[in-house]
Image (cartoon, rainbow, N blue to C red):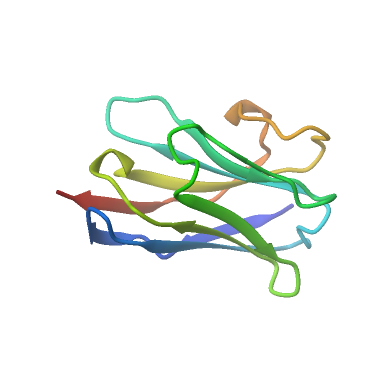
Length: 125
């Protein structure tokens, strides 16, 4: 079993930056695919970014390409989401998740096994 704790959320003005962290415990995450999702009020949980365990290939939603960067530090058992050029529409609760068995990175939250509690990101105009 893997426990995930997100941190780094907060309030930022449009155009600013935040870095979210997802610290994993219970198991190392080096062999797992990791993903970031977000959910805004009245909307479904949506895929943001993911990184696989092999070559470290990354995948991004079209809405965040060029602005967000997902990375991992295996030594720290932590995954990061660097968010630059933030927009008000990025406002949401951001969740870290792990897919233990996925070979191809999935954008479907139903394919992920463990989730953190989420961290709020609010972007003001």
